[in-house]
Image (cartoon, rainbow over all chains, first blue to last red; front, side, top):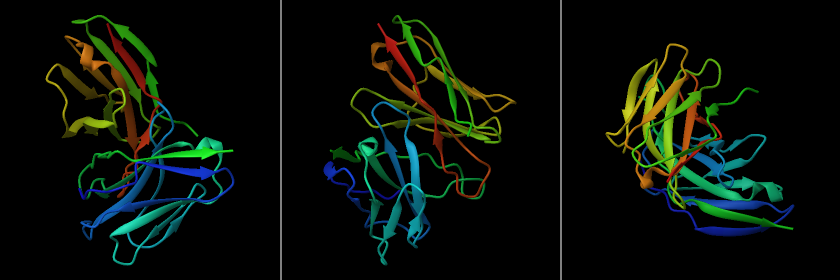
Length: 115
Length: 113
């Protein structure tokens, strides 16, 4: 799996957009970008994933650069409950076709949302 | 929506004792993963199962074993417990799909005294 680089910590004011960057310059063509977050001592929570197109769901948006070497997770209106460690993980999509791919967690970005 | 269930949520054991952690995946999910998260560390993959067969193995000690049953629930058996086994143990499940997004349970906090 390609390695990722994330800033260790970020701050964001409540109600503002939180933009979390991730560098993955060695990503392969068949590797997806996944984002998970972990609120203190809870199980990691899936947020979003994408291959090359930008993606949006009810939780967040994922912007992937055209060369796929970096991406940004956007929380459009951060709340206090979004305070968590955010993990950017690059991996081949798992399942029956490509094998069952474990998640390799790096150090992530600790996001602190303040009032 | 139904989530991954883990039991027990908290477990306290003495050194050299054994422990069994249970994981009940989301209904119709056929793949189960186990992760260990030590204090101040990031989650580390232990082992995974698909259709009751081991599908991948990580840094799981030989003292640990796991299996998946016909109803897809999984159990992680830990013997000769050591102080360093104190950690959060997470189970995740994924559906029978091409891209296996993993959904995590709340974890079991194991404390070895």
